[in-house]
Image 1: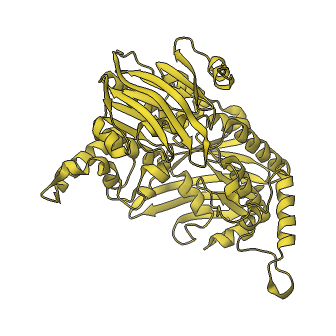
Image 2: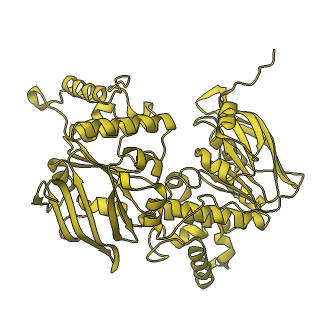
Image 3: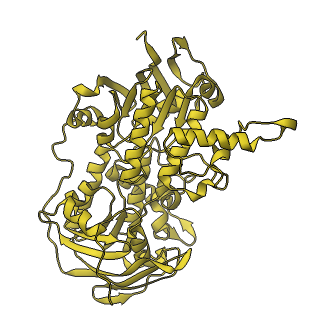
Length: 511
């Protein structure tokens, strides 16, 4: 199209003979927001790395036209100088440096004698934050002082300081609260009004619907199509992404629920930074055999702290009386938890779920490596057989079991982490934000797996920030607010309003 700011035509990218992109197209006009959709492993991030020259010209096939001229960038600096700036899912900020230092890192203004002009840098940074309606941020403070949502906006300020004409946002709200997400979407709309174009990559289709002018869908590295958002529905986008209809996003299945199998009493978690504050305040609950117990609450309510204590990995002082089949058990480390039949998929798979440099297969068997060891030697043949079964069962998209897991998409990494925690055959499986950063098709597969597990008698505790997910999957819902248990509801006609009311309503205090 003649009026396009960007055109990517027939983009091909291969890794070791495996074609990750096979003739991808993308067109973006000035001031347009294009939603880029596809399942995990479809090639979205690879496509953006081609565009931003993370993969330089000459390592891929096809043509990129930028402002009507062919772009042959061989470095990120070249694409940024042209006005193409990408904000990755994992933010590229240095926590110990100030907001201003992060924004202008490597491009600091200099004054007399070649010294950094901090006054000018702080002034420019403050102006950028004011433009984003974030004047409350002190640009002289270290980035570490600010929340995930505020850091995301600092990244946008950094991009704007580079005079971005096209801003690429890769899963920008995967770790944001609802209010932070609303703020971000409002800022993207403001950028659009100023003429800045955006490519918005997200699995959250409600965000795509709210902000995109058009949607481009890719599947398995191939171009599926591009349509104006006004002509699309969620159902159509899903069908384009996965190649089939999906009538129900939550494939709820009837399953038997038995007697109490696990119980936690008097769980208390002390804030590591403030011994006078309880992150979890005397919470007790029961879990039945074959039950899916959802844990809901606002961000910071203490949900992750609670399940971390159950798994023996809470970072601060804590106490918890745990019972399995009515008998007390000792869990002070994850190794003890796994030995007792408790396994957990952590909230942050990057930090706590995977070893990025190790192979996909090696990550999967880490939790049961001793099962393959005899006389200090690993039975690699038996290990590889089980790895192959796990990869097939979880439908993990990987060119090889020996590929470093850090090379996989986020959703496929998540599947591998789940496979790792299923390897010890848990009786209680804790899933902390199991579908964060996972596309709709992979979410469906995870839900199906959960129902298959509970039918075999496994009990599941699921922490989720997505209320439709909690209500769509859980048999019962615990509501946590400010570290306290504020509700224990059977999920029969339970509404979001009832859960949120419980989450924000203070319990009566003892006199």
